[in-house]
Length: 365
Ligand SMILES: [Zn+2]
Image 1 (spheres, rainbow, N blue to C red):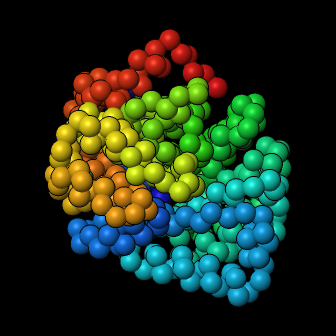
Image 2: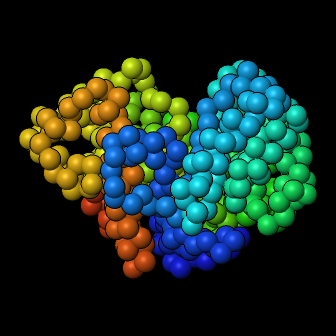
């Protein structure tokens, strides 16, 4: 794997090219997940999906991880992941499974998860701790994973994932362990599972790590539409601020956001004009037309966007985010390339709002 940095802006934002097994991806980018791709399919949208990197996601719990030891279940999971990847032959393929419940990751589970990834043909293996895995135990498992990947898939790369844990101290410890692997030259990419939160101190640490290791690829996982800061959600796009922290690529969270079942008017909608995120109810209050010309919205009447069940509308917001965020990231890339990224993030209301909240925080982890 090779990451070529074309420009690093003074804010920390980077414009890069990722090269892996003959595949290329321009960064920063939003990585479509299998859940978003399913939404696009259900809506029968013909417009090609941006596909330089794709991520197959599976929500697993303790029972499902245990069932992976059974042949039938393992084969069924493998078939569904492989089917998804078949549609993206030119993209860098990744798999990620956030494990939902209380269970401490063990060696057997890690091996099964890695086998699943290997057989489905990923280029990027991921491994994250569960919330009940101690940082010390996770470090041991990282070593196990490194050894196994080296044995079964020499050319593939391993992305250890730093997850936002229950205790900040644990997050810090997991970060330090992954940092050690970077410094030893054992890994060339790092994942950051923000678990829906605005993990700003972790993100600042990632930015510092990047400064020392510019060849490192950082991918953020479980990124919700809006950052949860303290106890409130900011009406700003989480994804669009990530390049400020030198994050090269990111994907949406796999766990469905509350409320469940979704309520149409409360669904989050990325507003591309000022990089904010609004409830659809608010979008309807502001205008009769959708404020976007992507293949999903095509500036149609808001009423039309809200037609159908709340799940169909949720599919539309997800599909819209795939096209619209990628389009705005192209704007980010252009500004980063000119060394003027600070200008655009201050000009856009959503990202400017995040910056004003961050002012005064040192954010060191
Ligand atoms: Zn749109």
